[in-house]
Amino acid sequence: MEWQNVVFHQGNEELQRFIEIGVLAAKAGVPIHFHVEGVRGTGKTTLIRAAKSRLPQLERVKDCRYNCEAGSPHCPEHQSLTGLESEVVDTPFLEISHSAKVGTVVGSIDLDKLTSVHNPAAAILPGTLPRAHRGIVFVDEINRLADTSPALVDVLLDVMGTKPGRVQIEETGLPTVEMPVNLNVWAASNPDEEPGPLQEIRRQLADRFDFVVRIERPDQPEVIRSIMNASAQNMAISLEAEKQPLSDLSLITLDEQAEDFLSNLYIRYRLESIRGIQAARLGALLHAALYGRRIAGFSDLAAILPAALRHRIEAPKLQEIAAALGEEVVSEQKKATSPAKAKKDPAKDRGPQRYPALWRGLWQRLSKKQNQSSGKTVAVNTPQEEKQGATQQNEEKKTANALTNQGETNN
Ligand SMILES: [Zn+2]
Image 1 (spheres, rainbow, N blue to C red):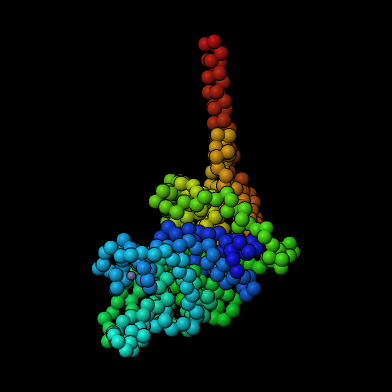
Image 2: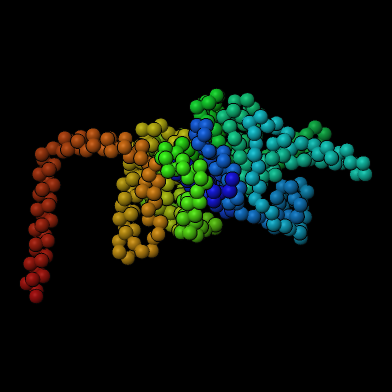
């Protein structure tokens, strides 16, 4: 299915956003890894495969199976060569199934070359991972892979442990080849089916994903009708018109207050690894880039933070963070809607406002919580404190009066 034929609705809007962010990340050469969790029938695999039609083209050394960049070749064949001829090809989008073998994923002996009649030679045939360099690798049913193939999990841990990651090809009788791979791992799983959520099977692998994205079934009859009719009216087209993405991430900075907010999160909530914070930062930059803005702020953070943290901290803490972030978004939007700026910012309906489904659950729980805590705040205020407050107000009034009077006298 082509991307423009996908019907978007509240249940799949988070995945839509991360696919767009992921495509931009691949284009910018700054990889991100995300894992989509959802029950059967939500269309997660269809949506991910539809992203193929959104991928840009890339320039590589002619016929290089490792997608070497002409300016800095990295593969065993071209590493030491210069002045190489180049060609433009589609960005690779390759898949690894849960039952794949290490040899096909990493690389193996090239039997064609070994058995060549005229020029037999022992050579490496690169596997899925080295061939997906600078592109996307999609692992469907990653929870099953984690359950049945610890060897493949180790390979993925190496690939996703650093950016760029590393892959090592070992074959008896041949020298071991190790090379960098700059690729984006997109994965999907159904946590309700055997063997259960990835986080419970291999926590370390779950943590390697920058984001965990949720997808839900459509719950409105109009959406079902559009899906049946493959209606051409969808969000992708309208978003397309208003977006002019920036693909150079070095042009974008995170607002200083948002940066402070993130570093405080790490300390205050004692996050296990710093990956969550790094992912959130990168996600916010990419989200701003998607809308062609050079400064990423709280609303960009709000759009990606649940996905950066939901597999790393418990739900009550995430709700607390959402509440704090919500306040920052509101005050940021107040600033943005001041008459001077209002016209200039077409994407001011971001964050909680733009992604209602994602935040709805959080807000509902939060508003209950806020009511409770505001009750407490009133009770905690002692009469003395209130009196102090009143005195202070009187003082301010006096000062104001004094200033006004003085002004009048001078006139
Ligand atoms: Zn090469």
